[in-house]
Image (cartoon, rainbow, N blue to C red; front, side):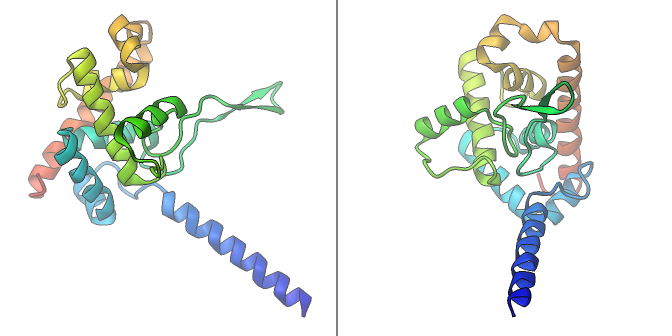
Length: 196
């Protein structure tokens, strides 16, 4: 009898792990905003709520989240290894859809007053993106629709953006250009399928 109980427990744990990974997995088609909306309507409800609250255009939110996590809810930075075998911790504290760092997330939670917010919750993550892009507008004058410069400030922080730290990172400028292109593509797609 104890083997049967053990087997049921193991099956339950494996099923829970499978459901968790499915819950946080990337959508099937990240290249088509309309298909993405059909597959994950909750994402779009969250992004539309953020657009109403903070004014950050939905395609800009989508492009930033795509660049940060590919819409994987529990995304984390890779583990650093010493000598190829000794784990030395993660590259940063970034977590979730928005890849918000611990300190920045804590600032958001305190300022907005959302104590139970989670970086692995799409509604909280998109709200964070809206809050952060508004801080970029306030602190650096970057318009909310300027996906390229919003992303540069998102990646390098407000002070780093002001100092132009991204200029020493050609790879980051390339990513920011792709974020701008993706935001424009998502906007066109959503207009074509009547969702904008």
